[in-house]
Image (cartoon, rainbow, N blue to C red; front, side, top):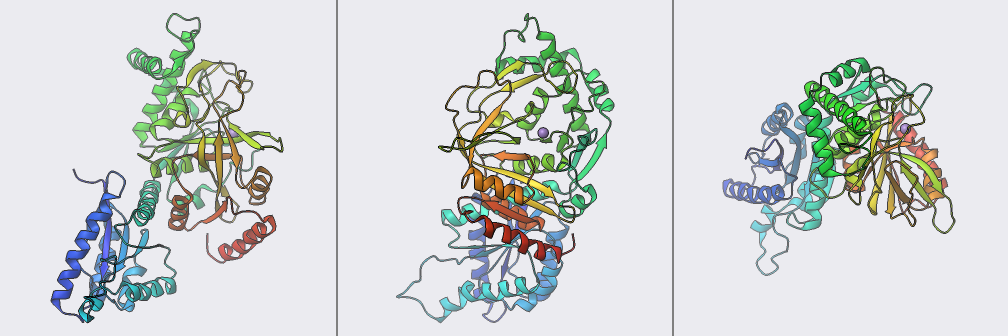
Length: 499
Ligand code: MN
């Protein structure tokens, strides 16, 4: 099987030690590459280049990595010493993500056998310091991973970086469809699309919802029937929506919207989309079930025209591919302020992704108070309990900020029989008062991506690739004043860089 993408392994050395040493370096590098490849997400391979011993070879390696569309990033490690001025021209031309693997071929010192030949062959301890020095001098954004390359912790950190690199590649030119515009008068869902494309690569374009309505109208009976059958298989369908039920026609209409939307997104190669309940011209329902099912397939989504969250949901879903758990568009909706356990109830009008569900979702129909359209179909469920991240992308006007809060999803202690939407109940870390105050000081929005598949490390790696500030709120965020000070320091740092 040919991999869709690969990471190029740059192994640094020099000519001082003779050809035998370089042959050994090459053989060791191949073995390390095989070990690294086994830890990668599906579809990603490792390609190991020639041992790099001259400035010309390093420049060529970086140029080729940069030019190859299947190359999603470069991993570098110095097996022996490699004078770092040889790396300057190459590194200056490298725009792809870089990970510095500070490892060495053998885990343990061979105390009884070690001699100077061994010492010359295994010099990462100082070769990588030389390499790191030049990266810092050149202000190259990268991740440094330290440890033996075969150890699980090392490989987990490497895999996290690779997942971030896959998502970063996916964002480049990734088109996002925006049906209608922003919800009127709303601030936080607005933003500078051109600035986002310059920094992040994805391209947001607007489409009249009437165009989508035409796709919906062109849906065939066969498509509708097939989708209805899939819903009957996958969900607990309310009797009124089932075939023969009094509201079955509404489910057929929801299926029709889904089919049209999927065809529109597929034809345009779109990776994410937004809708807004204020602009539904030609659609009979606000897309609810359709959005939920398309998110579960891997599309990013943001409601009320929120293209930033749509892009973010897409990136998180790409990063998390194949991992257990789920990821969804989310909104901090309402609070439980009992001092014994303060919680957030997250939900939306309809659009929560069923990958978060703890049990089989139920497919229901209920009125929607806003939008003035027919009652929309939706999946209703409780998100499964467990650790999660609540993530947001903020446009501060002069720059972007990525914001992440570590949270604990909880089982609701009581049923919520009258709430007709999918929901998630969580305890934000370190606690709700600290988390919410920090979030608000940071200018964080109400729309987020909630994921149970990733760790903060994935976000750190992704933020580093994007060159965007990452603000973390977690168990260690206990001093709000210090948190506010860090926002101010970051302001100085990021303002000194061009957007
Ligand atoms: Mn909303």
